Length: 148
Image (tube, rainbow, N blue to C red; front, side, top):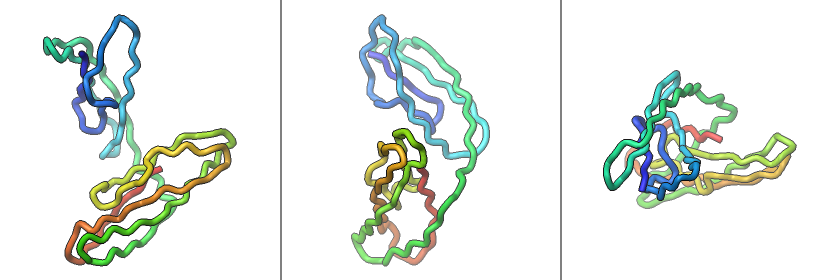
């Protein structure tokens, strides 16, 4: 069994569990969610789980830029116990071919995304649900970015 490890919480293998390695070429899917702006270098390692032997090392260079904010919303969540507010977020595919879109929240403990991966036909549209969790019991203002 082989497991992939990363030097940064921004990059992780999907799935994170060990997988069976054979002599064939393997494709590993990585999830990259930067929590910074700028350039960074990340180290990825493949380790044999049973012998704890290092099998391979990769260096990944990344560049993350601040998102282009196209819409802003002011959302007021009442301070009540166990209140969750659900709002629909429309998403359109401006391309003439089918595309896959990933929706994520910068503060998932406050705003959860219902369906994170959306397959939208060319020039089509759909909606995903945003769930606003009431995790604070006093008036406060948060900034949460929802990225598509």
